[in-house]
Length: 344
Image (tube, rainbow, N blue to C red; front, side, top):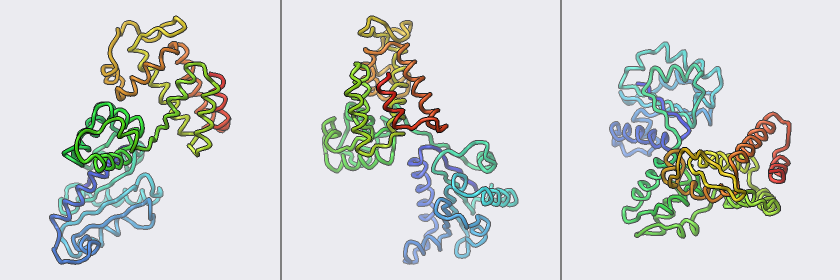
């Protein structure tokens, strides 16, 4: 049997992989009292990780497995994303020549990718068609909120988390489930019982999305370029990745454009932004429609008072152009960020 796990959400796909492995070991453990590594080997478990080694052949591992067990589980990691084209081609030819593997329940080969391979890859096409494949997409909006609440309860049933705290946690960490999981464990160990609130997040969680990102956007919306430049340079001096800063500027202005379509509030200049036909709806409705957290919408609605729709579109186009110029080597990213802040 072939199983294919992939997608940008490698935290959840990794959990699924661990679930499959643990179930296999539980069902096939010989109870010999041997060390864990030996027990796994005796149970018929083999692992190839092409991010660490590129010399092993799937055909060789499959042939040498099963010496001590009639059941086999072969875990193949990052074959598409990390292995050479030669290794991929050899693996594909092996799978095509052993079609019995597709239906054989005694031999399970799990292909796990720490990301989303290109769909036009030959091996991807074969696995997508001939295996039990599952794509794990990044969580966002209500799904991310629910996941956070579930993880809090899973780690400590005596602890809950407020909606406001969830919002701030998302702002601080984003949708990186590995970091979120670590922060949730820290929060539930600290709190022990009761409700996690915004103050707990501020005290215990290190913000991935520096608060300066929001302060910079607010400074730009208010025309305070001096403060915006100070905040930008402060981030760069602290060692923040300039590509990450650019991506966050783009992310926030893209959100502002989306929010503006549903929240027609007049700007301070007397202009209006947003699609007035949408009517006035609250931040939770907007968040649901555009797939972000309500806290992001709340921050965005405050910033929008200083931007017209035309201005937002112009800024977003400028950011896209900067990104293209950087990728094509036409400009230096730090100079581009400086120029963006001074010219907006």
